[in-house]
Image: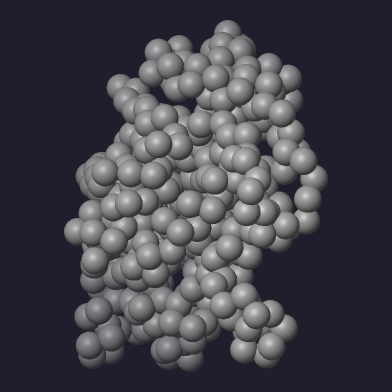
Length: 387
């Protein structure tokens, strides 16, 4: 789908316009969610703007009344039903000067960085505020009164323990949350460590958002992917164009930008990410000191991966070959959808097969073939829908 036109209209009107133009099929489930988003647009327009104050001022305002608040929206449903597209339409026309749209993992990485920075200031004597949550919440609210998240999910205990206190502050001071997710709120952090401590956040979340299901009968994402080339060779201008075409179709409506994945005190750099889709070169992944845990973190964070310019592998690239084998194992085991451009077909990528490494690469070549199949795509879609 082409980038969204700059409509100064409701989400329902945008959806109807795209349907009338033939770019979209009429979908009653999407129209229902669009109506809920339009309710928020109306409420935001009539809400009185908050009085200007410093980023930290409200922390010390003991007698101030509650900030004007607009109830947000939590849209859950299977992948490929149009949740992201509707969020794009809403965010584009939301009548709020300070607003932020990002992936939930990106938001939480930012929160942890701010908490760490505050603790460093406390350690150096730059602040006497021992609790980092109020000032971090104040910073976030000063930057955005409307938060829009893609893929709200909680799998990390550090995130689980911080969410209730953080959003208690944000909601209390007028922050509006609109988010998409693949699971209902009651299933967030399901079976997680010390989940009982997380449940108050779920109760609070449901008080501040409407919970709606986008249960369209059509998986539009699956329809898109079926028509796209997923493994292109040889490495030439045609391969680059095919990869760019697939990337643009799968990330339509998302703003692609670099991001980072926190990993045991360091960061895994992701050159380009849009929602749950990321793009790397072979050099980014296999010519850097990354290991199995890094590749597993990438596979957990993204459900579709692009890898550009996989070269022919030989004895001079033994370390790169080992990393490539481990990488494909991680993506395969997590049912990650792979788009790749390569110098040769999978069975011809490794020149000479020797010993265990040769046997392992035979498995890699077999998996690269399987990851192009309709059965693998169906498994990928099924696992993402249940995650």
